[in-house]
Each structure stands twice: as structure tokens, then as C-alpha cells.
Length: 346
Image (cartoon, rainbow, N blue to C red):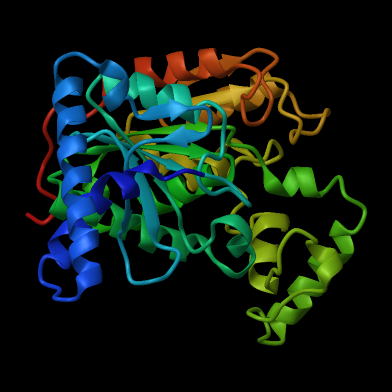
């Protein structure tokens, strides 16, 4: 990934630091920096005169223009923001996801920019292969730190949370915590809220591994790693494996075999948050026996009357229905986004 934002600020940084140096080499560097800075100032002036491509959040395929920043003390706590606006959509990916996790993020960044919104792609400690040694609680803590950063450093006027796959569980869990900054969440979008448990139940090794995880937890070894065959993609603790795969585990929020009361218990606290459920009707991670229309209807009801968006023939990441996904997200954000917000510290 080309983080062109870093380059755009490097010229002024180099010029400032080199001006205090005394070596003959620093003089050469300083001269080059001054010329580069002048040239870029000229380019900036041209863009203000009408070159709209200069300020576009997407330069070309898989290349975003924006700001890369740290929002917490852990190495993984990094986020990338396109656009410089007071309202942000925060994208939270699923298992193994990181930056540019779905194809709809590029056109979404452009569409949000036109509406004066920033797109923030967040890395958590659970991103990429870190999910196996992380927890929903840890994700919620880091998400709260990100929103705090946006409030205090970017003067945010409110955020919309956009979860993909297991990122939906992060949103639901975070909103249950009633953390200080959760009041800045004006709306939530759950894209592909599917059951990890029901999908993994289709794999032959899962039943035996759940028994092993349960035994390890009962012996006080929940933070120890499971055998590699339990989860070849990433090292995973017994606690997280049980959370993802066991009936009524912490991650078990969207399963079709949960009763209405169980779904309400898991999702009912979202009632006061405007919510959109975007369900892919051809999601490859939803077993064939699941009645998808019935499930999405029940999820929306448990969420307190969430808006339902059924994407016909859409796959899990909506890579085959990008335009529909972006249209639905933008329409919802424009209707339900922040119109001023209460200070969460007050």
C-alpha cells in the first residue's frame, strides 16, 4: 500500500530539521528540500484553482491519500484517515482484515468525501492474525481510544461505526460497554453480521476442538494456545476459540438457532442507536440451511427496528455488489449521521 500522505508531509519536516544542521551534507539536503517545498506549494496552488484530482482520497486503484496516525500506545493501534472533516465513518474489519479490507472502501471514501465525511480505517490488536489472541473486550477498549483521539485531536462532531463480518460483533460489544466515548456514536452499520459459530460448525474438526477448548478453560488454561489444526490461519487461545465457536460464546450474536429472547438479550441494547443491517443474500459463510430472509428480519427486530438492506446475490465482502453497498451506506449516513452531538466528557 502506498501511503502517499506520509510523503506529502516529509518535505517540510526535512526542511525544518536540516536548517539546524551544520554539515556540508545538510546544506545540500536543505537546498533540495527548499526546492521541493516550493514546487509542492505551486502544485497546491494549482489544486486550489480547480484540480479536483489532487484532493481526491483515492489516487488510483489500491492507493489512498490521507493521514496515517497512532491513536494508542500499542504498536498495532494505527489508523488511516481520508478527508479532513469533523464527521467520521470508522470501518472495523473482520477476522484477518486490516487496511483496505473490502473493495467498496475505495468508492466509499470518494463518496464520503463529497459529503464532507472522513473515512477512518482502524487497525486493532486483533487485526490481521492478531484476532486469535485478542478479545471483544480488548477491541472495545481500543475502539474507545480511537474515538477519544478523534474527539480530542480532530474535534470530531460524531462518528458512524461501520462493521464488516466479525467487526459487527466489535460494534455490538462496544456499545454494550457504555464507555465514555460511545455517546459520540451516532449510528452503526452492520455489514455481513453472520455467525462464526454456524460456519465453523460445518468444519469436521470443530466439535472436538470446542471440547478441548472447554476443558482447557475449566483447567484455568484459557489463555493458552490451541493446537494449530484448530485454526490454521492464526494462533488462537482456548478462550477466543470458545468465544467464536461455542453455543452462546461471547461472539455468538447472529446465529439463526438463537431464540428471539436470546437475540434480544445479545442485541437489545442497540435499540437507541440508529442501525442498518446490510445482509448479503448469497454470503458464502452462511450455511445453506439458514433461512436468510427470516434471519435478517429477526436481527433487525432484536436491534430495536434496525433498517434492513438485503443485497441480492451479494457475497460476504460485497466485492460483486460494490455500487449497491456504497449507495446504501451513503444514504444511511446522510440520514442518520451526526447533526451536532453531546460532549461525552460532560
